[in-house]
Length: 170
Image 1 (tube, rainbow, N blue to C red):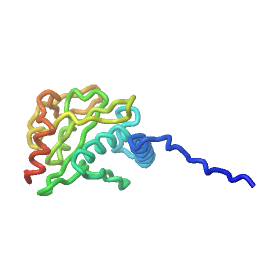
Image 2: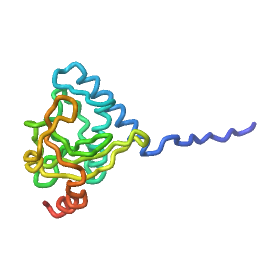
Image 3: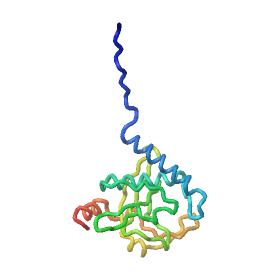
Image 4: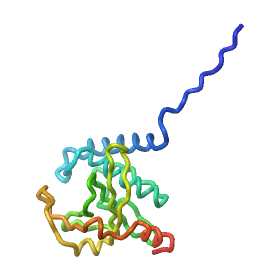
């Protein structure tokens, strides 16, 4: 009788690929949940997936998991709480030229800008600013009929500074 050798299945997806699939699936689920709501404004393709990729990049940097709870009313503009209970909202765009937030909707203590890459399906963190500073920034309509406070990406504080503050208790 010949003994058969067990076949070893090779893992076809890397850990990064698995994260990408999880982010895409969760983004699609969020899109479906919010698609018929008056407050939903899909300003770009797969915008929930793009946003969640930025949140995941921030979570990986800070050792915090993104909040994956599906809330019909959304997250009230807060993605994370960091030491001393500062709230953080991560804003992700394919072309992250400016950190923007709708006028009258500044609700987080800290805003982080991330840029999403369609090819890698990942986001990289660009910089950050205090919500109070963003609230005082100029206002502009970027072509969607929404007035947004904005700060150019080149004027944002470096992520290293936020990490140093986080480690030192801000």
